[in-house]
Image 1 (cartoon, rainbow, N blue to C red):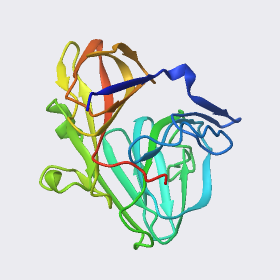
Image 2 (image 1 turned 30 degrees about the vertical axis):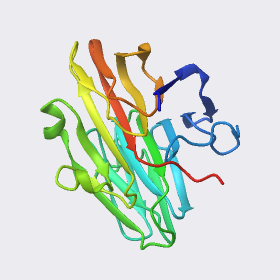
Image 3 (image 1 turned 180 degrees about the horizontal axis):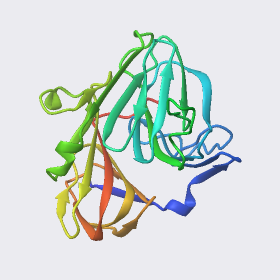
Length: 253
Protein backbone atom coordinates (compact mmCIF):
# COMPACT_ATOMS: atom_id res chain seq x y z
CA UNK A 1 0.00 0.00 0.00
CA UNK A 2 1.35 3.40 -0.98
CA UNK A 3 1.92 5.99 1.72
CA UNK A 4 -0.72 8.74 1.91
CA UNK A 5 0.38 12.13 3.27
CA UNK A 6 -2.27 14.61 4.43
CA UNK A 7 -1.04 18.01 5.63
CA UNK A 8 -3.31 20.01 7.97
CA UNK A 9 -2.37 23.66 8.40
CA UNK A 10 -2.54 25.49 11.72
CA UNK A 11 -4.96 28.15 10.51
CA UNK A 12 -7.43 25.56 9.22
CA UNK A 13 -8.11 24.04 12.66
CA UNK A 14 -11.33 24.54 14.59
CA UNK A 15 -10.94 27.46 17.01
CA UNK A 16 -12.59 28.09 20.38
CA UNK A 17 -12.09 31.37 22.23
CA UNK A 18 -13.45 32.50 25.59
CA UNK A 19 -12.25 35.24 27.98
CA UNK A 20 -9.85 32.71 29.55
CA UNK A 21 -9.20 30.08 26.85
CA UNK A 22 -7.76 30.02 23.35
CA UNK A 23 -8.04 26.49 21.95
CA UNK A 24 -7.19 25.02 18.55
CA UNK A 25 -8.68 21.61 17.72
CA UNK A 26 -7.11 19.25 15.18
CA UNK A 27 -10.27 17.10 15.16
CA UNK A 28 -13.99 17.59 15.73
CA UNK A 29 -14.45 18.70 19.33
CA UNK A 30 -17.30 20.09 21.44
CA UNK A 31 -19.53 22.31 19.29
CA UNK A 32 -17.17 21.96 16.31
CA UNK A 33 -18.29 19.00 14.21
CA UNK A 34 -17.10 17.68 10.88
CA UNK A 35 -18.01 14.03 10.20
CA UNK A 36 -15.01 13.81 7.87
CA UNK A 37 -12.59 14.89 10.62
CA UNK A 38 -13.32 12.90 13.78
CA UNK A 39 -10.02 11.05 14.27
CA UNK A 40 -6.86 9.70 12.69
CA UNK A 41 -5.79 6.19 13.57
CA UNK A 42 -6.63 5.91 17.26
CA UNK A 43 -6.18 9.62 17.99
CA UNK A 44 -9.51 11.34 18.69
CA UNK A 45 -8.43 14.63 20.24
CA UNK A 46 -5.40 16.86 19.83
CA UNK A 47 -6.10 20.28 21.32
CA UNK A 48 -3.53 23.06 21.57
CA UNK A 49 -4.77 25.15 24.52
CA UNK A 50 -3.69 28.46 26.04
CA UNK A 51 -5.21 29.17 29.47
CA UNK A 52 -5.01 32.58 31.12
CA UNK A 53 -3.55 32.98 34.65
CA UNK A 54 -5.98 32.41 37.51
CA UNK A 55 -8.38 30.42 35.32
CA UNK A 56 -8.84 26.97 33.86
CA UNK A 57 -11.08 23.98 33.43
CA UNK A 58 -13.32 23.44 36.47
CA UNK A 59 -14.01 19.93 37.73
CA UNK A 60 -15.60 17.86 34.96
CA UNK A 61 -16.04 14.15 34.15
CA UNK A 62 -14.34 11.81 31.68
CA UNK A 63 -14.89 8.14 30.94
CA UNK A 64 -13.14 5.43 28.90
CA UNK A 65 -10.35 7.58 27.52
CA UNK A 66 -6.55 7.65 27.81
CA UNK A 67 -5.62 11.34 28.12
CA UNK A 68 -2.04 12.61 27.70
CA UNK A 69 -1.17 16.23 28.52
CA UNK A 70 2.08 17.84 27.32
CA UNK A 71 2.87 21.34 28.58
CA UNK A 72 4.82 23.63 26.24
CA UNK A 73 4.97 26.85 28.31
CA UNK A 74 3.97 27.70 31.88
CA UNK A 75 2.51 25.26 34.40
CA UNK A 76 -0.82 23.48 34.83
CA UNK A 77 -2.32 22.32 38.13
CA UNK A 78 -4.03 18.91 38.00
CA UNK A 79 -6.46 17.50 40.58
CA UNK A 80 -8.76 14.51 40.26
CA UNK A 81 -11.30 12.45 42.17
CA UNK A 82 -8.80 9.59 42.65
CA UNK A 83 -6.66 11.83 44.88
CA UNK A 84 -3.97 12.70 42.36
CA UNK A 85 -2.71 16.26 42.26
CA UNK A 86 0.35 18.05 41.02
CA UNK A 87 1.82 20.68 38.77
CA UNK A 88 2.54 19.75 35.14
CA UNK A 89 5.39 21.68 33.49
CA UNK A 90 7.43 21.42 30.27
CA UNK A 91 9.20 18.09 30.04
CA UNK A 92 6.83 16.30 32.46
CA UNK A 93 5.02 13.38 30.81
CA UNK A 94 1.51 12.96 32.26
CA UNK A 95 -1.29 10.49 31.57
CA UNK A 96 -4.73 10.15 33.10
CA UNK A 97 -6.80 7.02 32.48
CA UNK A 98 -10.47 7.98 32.81
CA UNK A 99 -11.58 4.36 32.82
CA UNK A 100 -14.88 3.67 34.59
CA UNK A 101 -15.17 7.37 35.39
CA UNK A 102 -13.11 10.19 36.86
CA UNK A 103 -13.57 13.85 37.76
CA UNK A 104 -10.70 16.28 37.31
CA UNK A 105 -9.77 19.93 36.97
CA UNK A 106 -6.91 21.67 35.18
CA UNK A 107 -6.05 25.17 36.30
CA UNK A 108 -3.45 27.87 35.80
CA UNK A 109 -3.94 28.98 39.41
CA UNK A 110 -1.19 27.78 41.73
CA UNK A 111 -0.56 30.02 44.76
CA UNK A 112 2.42 30.60 47.05
CA UNK A 113 2.18 30.12 50.82
CA UNK A 114 1.82 33.91 51.18
CA UNK A 115 -1.31 33.91 49.05
CA UNK A 116 0.37 35.44 46.02
CA UNK A 117 -0.26 33.90 42.58
CA UNK A 118 2.60 31.65 41.53
CA UNK A 119 1.54 31.26 37.91
CA UNK A 120 1.26 34.74 36.42
CA UNK A 121 1.69 33.82 32.76
CA UNK A 122 -0.55 31.88 30.37
CA UNK A 123 -0.01 28.15 30.19
CA UNK A 124 0.10 26.45 26.81
CA UNK A 125 -0.33 22.71 26.48
CA UNK A 126 -1.35 20.02 24.01
CA UNK A 127 -3.92 17.53 25.26
CA UNK A 128 -4.43 14.29 23.33
CA UNK A 129 -6.98 11.50 23.73
CA UNK A 130 -6.92 7.89 22.52
CA UNK A 131 -9.45 5.18 23.26
CA UNK A 132 -8.32 2.42 25.67
CA UNK A 133 -8.11 -1.29 24.92
CA UNK A 134 -11.10 -2.02 27.17
CA UNK A 135 -13.97 -0.07 28.65
CA UNK A 136 -14.56 0.31 32.38
CA UNK A 137 -10.97 -0.09 33.58
CA UNK A 138 -9.89 1.33 36.92
CA UNK A 139 -9.05 5.05 36.61
CA UNK A 140 -5.37 5.84 36.93
CA UNK A 141 -2.66 8.48 36.72
CA UNK A 142 1.05 8.53 35.92
CA UNK A 143 3.70 11.23 35.47
CA UNK A 144 7.46 11.42 34.98
CA UNK A 145 9.98 14.17 34.27
CA UNK A 146 11.73 13.32 30.98
CA UNK A 147 13.81 16.48 30.47
CA UNK A 148 17.07 14.53 30.78
CA UNK A 149 16.03 12.15 28.00
CA UNK A 150 14.92 15.03 25.79
CA UNK A 151 18.28 16.73 26.25
CA UNK A 152 20.00 13.67 24.71
CA UNK A 153 18.34 14.34 21.37
CA UNK A 154 16.42 12.06 19.03
CA UNK A 155 12.98 10.67 19.84
CA UNK A 156 11.87 10.06 23.42
CA UNK A 157 8.94 7.67 23.90
CA UNK A 158 6.68 9.77 26.08
CA UNK A 159 3.90 7.21 26.53
CA UNK A 160 3.11 3.84 25.01
CA UNK A 161 0.99 0.73 25.34
CA UNK A 162 2.97 -1.14 22.69
CA UNK A 163 4.98 -4.13 23.85
CA UNK A 164 7.93 -3.11 21.68
CA UNK A 165 8.36 0.06 23.74
CA UNK A 166 8.03 -1.64 27.14
CA UNK A 167 11.67 -1.00 28.09
CA UNK A 168 12.01 2.53 26.75
CA UNK A 169 8.72 4.33 27.38
CA UNK A 170 8.54 7.01 30.06
CA UNK A 171 4.96 6.23 31.08
CA UNK A 172 2.35 3.75 29.86
CA UNK A 173 -1.28 3.78 28.82
CA UNK A 174 -3.93 1.17 28.10
CA UNK A 175 -3.79 1.07 24.31
CA UNK A 176 -1.58 -1.66 22.90
CA UNK A 177 -1.67 -0.25 19.36
CA UNK A 178 -0.42 3.28 20.08
CA UNK A 179 2.66 5.18 21.24
CA UNK A 180 3.48 8.86 21.59
CA UNK A 181 7.00 10.14 20.97
CA UNK A 182 8.44 13.64 21.39
CA UNK A 183 11.61 15.37 20.28
CA UNK A 184 13.14 18.77 20.78
CA UNK A 185 14.97 18.66 17.47
CA UNK A 186 18.12 20.73 17.31
CA UNK A 187 18.54 23.28 14.49
CA UNK A 188 19.32 21.49 11.24
CA UNK A 189 19.09 18.03 12.84
CA UNK A 190 17.35 15.27 10.85
CA UNK A 191 15.28 12.46 12.35
CA UNK A 192 13.08 9.77 10.83
CA UNK A 193 9.38 9.46 11.49
CA UNK A 194 8.09 6.08 12.59
CA UNK A 195 7.25 3.39 10.07
CA UNK A 196 3.68 2.40 10.94
CA UNK A 197 0.17 2.08 9.49
CA UNK A 198 -0.73 5.48 10.98
CA UNK A 199 1.61 8.30 12.02
CA UNK A 200 0.46 11.72 13.22
CA UNK A 201 3.10 14.46 13.41
CA UNK A 202 2.35 17.73 15.21
CA UNK A 203 4.74 20.68 15.13
CA UNK A 204 4.31 22.12 18.61
CA UNK A 205 7.10 24.68 18.28
CA UNK A 206 9.40 25.91 15.53
CA UNK A 207 9.31 24.51 12.03
CA UNK A 208 10.43 21.43 10.13
CA UNK A 209 10.96 20.25 6.58
CA UNK A 210 9.09 16.97 6.09
CA UNK A 211 10.15 14.66 3.28
CA UNK A 212 7.46 14.67 0.60
CA UNK A 213 5.62 17.66 2.06
CA UNK A 214 8.02 20.57 2.46
CA UNK A 215 7.81 23.15 5.24
CA UNK A 216 5.60 22.63 8.31
CA UNK A 217 5.33 25.48 10.79
CA UNK A 218 4.12 25.66 14.39
CA UNK A 219 0.61 24.25 14.64
CA UNK A 220 0.81 22.32 11.36
CA UNK A 221 0.24 18.56 11.37
CA UNK A 222 0.87 15.65 9.03
CA UNK A 223 -1.37 12.59 8.92
CA UNK A 224 0.54 9.75 7.25
CA UNK A 225 -1.10 6.45 6.35
CA UNK A 226 1.27 3.56 5.62
CA UNK A 227 4.13 5.72 6.85
CA UNK A 228 7.56 4.79 5.57
CA UNK A 229 9.92 6.65 7.88
CA UNK A 230 9.94 10.06 6.23
CA UNK A 231 12.84 12.34 7.12
CA UNK A 232 12.21 15.36 9.35
CA UNK A 233 14.70 18.23 9.44
CA UNK A 234 14.39 21.05 11.96
CA UNK A 235 14.60 24.67 10.88
CA UNK A 236 17.12 27.27 11.99
CA UNK A 237 15.52 27.70 15.43
CA UNK A 238 14.96 24.00 16.05
CA UNK A 239 11.55 22.43 16.68
CA UNK A 240 9.49 20.50 19.19
CA UNK A 241 7.49 17.71 17.55
CA UNK A 242 4.93 15.24 18.91
CA UNK A 243 4.61 11.98 16.95
CA UNK A 244 1.86 9.36 17.35
CA UNK A 245 2.76 5.88 16.10
CA UNK A 246 -0.36 3.70 15.66
CA UNK A 247 -0.90 0.15 14.41
CA UNK A 248 -4.71 0.39 14.27
CA UNK A 249 -7.54 2.84 13.74
CA UNK A 250 -10.84 3.59 15.43
CA UNK A 251 -13.54 1.20 14.22
CA UNK A 252 -16.20 3.49 12.84
CA UNK A 253 -18.39 0.64 11.57
